Amino acid sequence: MNIIDCRYRPNTPEWMATFTRNPVYAEYVELTHFDRKPTQSLAACAAQLASLGISKALVSGRDIESTYASPSSNGLVDACVAAFPDLFIGIYGYDPHKGMRAYKAMRQAFAEGRSLGASIEPAMAHCALDDARYYPLYALCCDHDLPLLVTAGLSPHMPGVLLSPTSPAALDKVATDFPDLRILVSHGGYPWAGETIAVCLRHRNIYLDFSSSINKPGGELYVKAANDCLADRFVFSSANPFVDVDKALEQIGRLGLSDEARDNMLHKNALHLIGHSLHNA
Image (cartoon, rainbow, N blue to C red):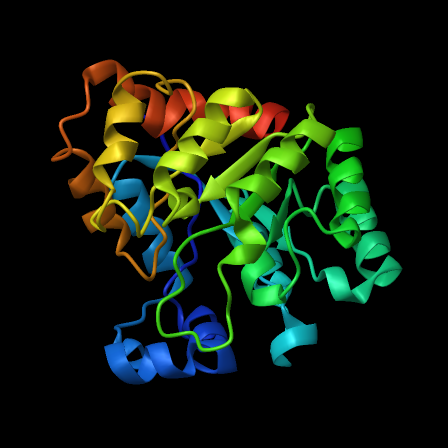
C-alpha cells in the first residue's frame, strides 16, 4: 500500500535543532529530554519510510520568527525535496507578521513549485486562524489549488502559547469565507475534539488528523468519526519526530478502524486533500 504521511519532519540533526533550539520548546525539551532523541541521516529517514510502505511524506516548514526569533525551517524543506523529490512534498511555513514580504515569498514559491501548500501555526504565531493577516494567504492557496495545513492542538509545556487562536469558531469562519480552501487541521483541533469534528461535518473542505492527540482524553471521538461520519476526511499524520513514524503506523492498526476507514486514512483521503501534487502517488 502506498501510504501518505501528511505531517512528517525527519529526525536529522538539522531538523531536531529547529525544535531543541527554539525558545517556544524550551520547557518541553527540559521536561521530556527531547534533545536526547536519536538522530539519523536524511538517507536513513528515507529508507525507513520506504520500509514502512510510505510513498509520500509532506514535510512542512515552520515560520514563527516574528514571535520567537527562531529561523524559518523552509530551507530544510527545500533540502529534503532536493535530495528525495519522489518521496518528499514540500510545504512552506508562513509568518503572518511579515505581511507582504511573506505573501510575496509564498507566491513565488507556489509559482516555482517549491512549495505545494502552506503551513501555519496560529497559536505559536499569536495570530488567530481567522485574523485578516492570514486571508491573503488563504486566497493565494485557492488561486493555486493548494492546501493549507493548520497546527491546531494542545501545546503542552509552552508558556505563553494560547489555544484560542485555533478555536473551532475561528476554523468555522475561515472554512465559510473560503469554501474552496482545502484545510488540514493537524492534531485534530484538540482539546476541542467534538467541536472540531462538528465543524468538519459542516464543511467538506476540512480534513483532520489526530496525530499526538489520539491517546488523550476524548481521543476516542476521532476514531468514531473516522469509522463513521468522517470516513472520507481523516488522513494519516505521524508527527515525526515527536511521535516516531513507525510507532504512529503501529498505533493505527490498534485503533479498531474498519478496513475502509484505515485505507481511506492511509492513502485515499490524502489524494483529495493534496490534489494534483499527488497525482502520481
